[in-house]
Length: 322
Image 1 (cartoon, rainbow, N blue to C red):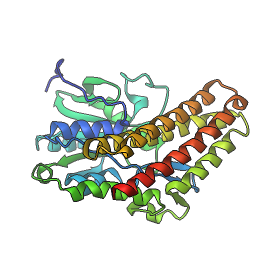
Image 2: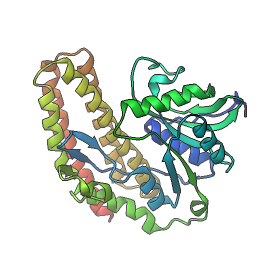
Image 3: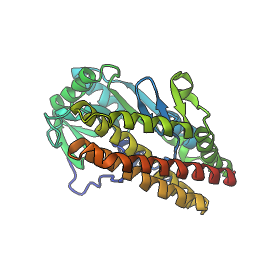
């Protein structure tokens, strides 16, 4: 399979690289539901300062809300991996693969920065994979060894995880007729989580703070990083920027869902929340690069107080919907 110069890459400003890849694969498989995503929770893990808006893993989310089956397995090595990919491609579906951007020659971070990433493999041509990287906007042929090195680098630098491949079966979804109950379930789940009720994966996190109460712990974490302008603290602020940006993305995606199906004032509240979290994230990344801490500390504290008020208001509006 050769690269197609007219191939249309998927691009959406409010998705991370993994959701980009998943969405592109599902759209090509025929999924046409106007929304795929919409989780808008909040968690702060006191054990490692991890922050996320997502209370269901991607595969659970897709199956529960959309009837999409997710199949994944650990990446095999060398020739076994090529055969592994070949077998899935023979099923007339593409394959998502977890890699390290450090080994991707078309990426600006090539040989400069390690970070987990996701790409899509669409075919095989001689000793090369035809891939699409929707996040970094690349479509073309990459030799086997480059992809194998990117997988190995992922395993080496992120030992707590195994690089995985994944693909989908959408047949049940294509026959699904969405009901009002399906729509209200997502609203209810977001409402319950923001009121401190853990769902699924979070129930086993003993040090997790869930929902609105997590905002205070996020504030304390950021305040502690602002106490000293060390390089370590600056790097931690930039890392927190990515987490905060994901919260902003989740609010925007939920805004779109509410706007599409409910036309309620709650939708605009989540749109505003997305902007507020984005402003906070931008403050953090600027601090991490070149701004003095004293200049931004009061502004960050003020922004977090505003976000807390907005999150309470948005959650109350969800109650009105239910």
